[in-house]
Length: 161
Image 1 (cartoon, helix red, strand yellow):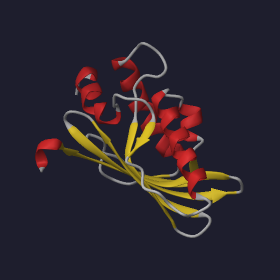
Image 2: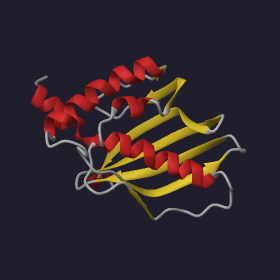
Image 3: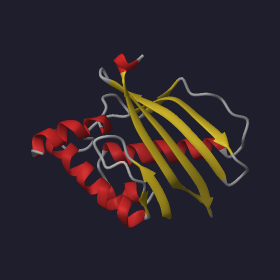
């Protein structure tokens, strides 16, 4: 597959608009604002294609499922996740050479479901003219930090109904 075609296929990771929440759901948990802040920092690192800061958001034992065209098998461990995102970031950077931020992410319908004081499930959508990108993060507190222990990413074409 040509580098240009691969870059176009990877565009489901790239979106237009500032890092922000729209349609966020309220929560009564005292931990929930810290989780939201963490997710927005994660998305900002992705916008800037700042790989060290981005990967620092993952736990060492994290797992991930990527959207098509990436291979469908689960990716296990921070080093493997980093390797996969190195190619994603390189493709986005080639398609948007201007410098940080390389693209904009808008976390629509951001929902934080606390699973006790030290873990949460976070869901949101990223939308563009062709598709809705569905994202789920499972996060856990590690001391004073929140870390991603699982990322699940899938995309649905807007014409899929």
